Length: 435
Ligand code: ADP
Ligand code: ZN
Image (cartoon, rainbow, N blue to C red; front, top):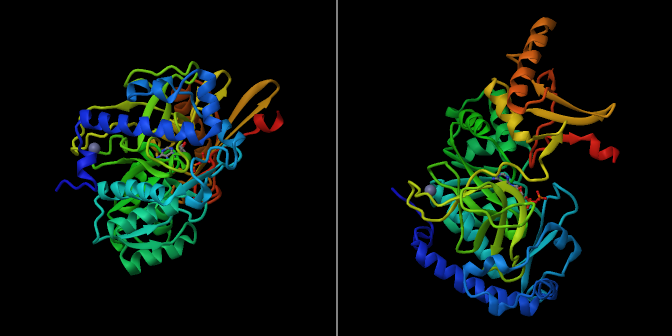
């Protein structure tokens, strides 16, 4: 049974979608020009007026907004509605620096929660489900977004927030949770804890998980699916654009549909700012076309990814984005080679290790060093030195094949790498600390 939350929008013809986007964009640019002096100055500087924007084809004429702009305009400089009309504030996790705050009117909260309702529905959720929200509640958008979406769908909502993993599992069992929402790293931790408690997926009723807020590989997806006995769906979003639900995965599990009636995506060359043709990898840029309080025109996410309009088996016509390959600022340049943590994760899981690892980069005697600590499971753990050295050597070789540079691999005892209940910290780059 095909199941959509907003079938008219999610399966809209391309032509009608473009028309809707154009109407909303034209009105939004006027709204911003009139109410946000900060952005008006940027438009004036570029010599663009609202009259120059007649349809989505003109989007590329607008200036970009970046995280630096948000920090400069902090806290109220990009607000497009009086505070009396705003009802909510959220803040980014601050993964890559100072936090920024975003404002919401009731309309903004509604459209965001609707996006999450689309995601829950696409994961098979209905009013028959018990949905456990194990994203953090508070300033972080994960908890609030999925919570609101769950209410809209009519699921019985368990607002657990993150943490207290054994209690998560106890509630999951007692109340028969069928859908789990949290970060993928926390989902992996919950799966591991379930096993440690002597339980199996047969002891819980979960059927689906909606995991996002951080990058995760296909290998990680399979690990989570097995450990919890579920189908795991990706969900993408960022506070500046509203929160989780900007894009969501369907049953095809091959990229995320972007809610493009609200957010128009573009892929640009991060160096030149030029818009790239469909299918090319570059930086993802969003324009929020019907958000009121914090509109964001051409916001540069720094996430690297590509878009595709290929027909999707689920029947949705919404454009799809691939799994982000990481942020441009996640990329490490080690001995001149570009390295993404996700490449390392792929090798680890392929070689039969768990996603519990820590990457440490440093510079010694003018040479970059790459150290990867990887945790062994109790089953893998061996006190025979020789075994450990052989394993370390073969894992280092596999990683070298992937990256082109040799790491130093350290296999460490079970349960020695800190687990994440929210966004995992997997990289420590000491070179930055020395600078
Ligand atoms: P912060 O930038 O401080 O982490 P947010 O909490 O708003 O703030 O996080 C948004 C960012 O999280 C995105 O720009 C993206 O890099 C990452 N992200 C969110 N969802 C996903 C996902 N499903 N896959 C990969 N990365 C994601
Ligand atoms: Zn689909």
